[in-house]
Image (cartoon, rainbow, N blue to C red; front, side, top):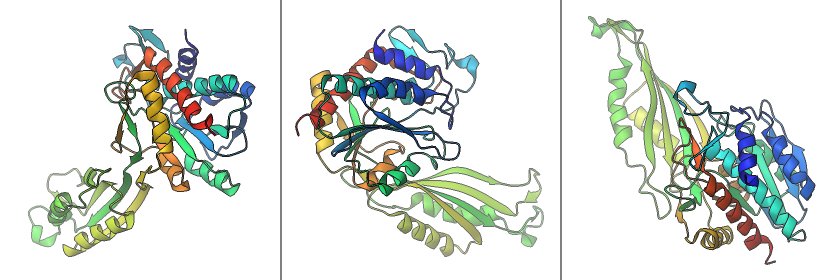
Length: 377
């Protein structure tokens, strides 16, 4: 059994349902402390965060990951128990195998091997782990970044182990992400009997024209790196449960995934203008999960593409598609952020798995990236 597979199985065996870590970080510390990495736990609220650093000089390369996983769902639907890692026909099964305990194992082993071969490498290496990525992400990486900035620890490059690959390992890497902005809207009406609509005011009927406008609005055209901004209804609710009552209010939750062509503030302004145009009586609250970011610097992109060519024989497509990641908290510091990890076909699904061969190949890719960035200075 390879070192990476052994560590991945040990991590999967710990049921670290967000925001629990369940002892995963201690396993990583055990692997890296003997190689000169100094461990610091930066816990906030119910979230465990680990900062492991070797060296004190720049440039600083950080591997970013999370140990928490989403719930497995109905256990009866799993071929193998989700927290009992099982290798079957060359695939490692278990919750978190792809998202993202496999990558955590791979970059942990890569760091250990690199330092063993090159103890006098330039700059510094760090591993940043959180147990609050799959949840609301308020006590995780965002808080650690505040600590690092307060003591002038500057990240130059950040490699995130999120499952970025599509059909095969390394066919896609993420060089940025769209922003995510959620609106919580309540439209007020007047409750009444459906037989006397003139004595009531139906908030669903009132909101319908505004909803049509919001859905069909062209928010932007995107750009060379980002698709156009999208508006989607996530949840909508109204009514008392009775068939003869006009509801008194309507609750709508919607989300924007937006490009660098827009700011959160501009989206909020335009939504308000549309709602006001239709004369709605409403309350609207916003939650910004992250602004869009794009890695423009070519150092980390070049280092990763070279490593992929050397190990896998191909380069990756550069993409900004998909959801958000904790890279959104690192990018505003000025760091070059890139996401490279396993194939994402089964993430958050029943029977989540990753190819065992991909774990070993990913470990080698990460090790080559370390060399490409820290052995030429």
